[in-house]
Amino acid sequence: MNVPRWTRPPGLTINVSHSPPAWFPSLACLGLDYFIFSYAIGLTFVFLIVPFSLVTFDYCSG
Image (cartoon, rainbow, N blue to C red):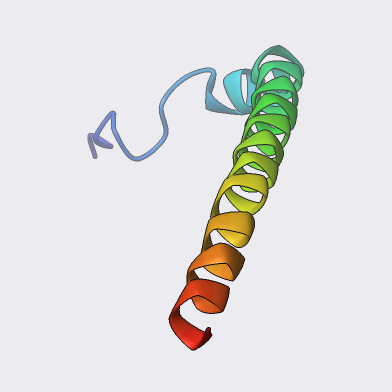
């Protein structure tokens, strides 16, 4: 009986066991960069939008 090749690819366990050390640090660094970038964007958004909204609220209420 001929077993199809795609059911058990040769070297699948070796690739799976050896690939996380290769892509996990880059993924962690990418996540850290994304966190810092989003944090900076959030701070900029807060420092830009909140004063303008307060000034607009004071102007509209006064």
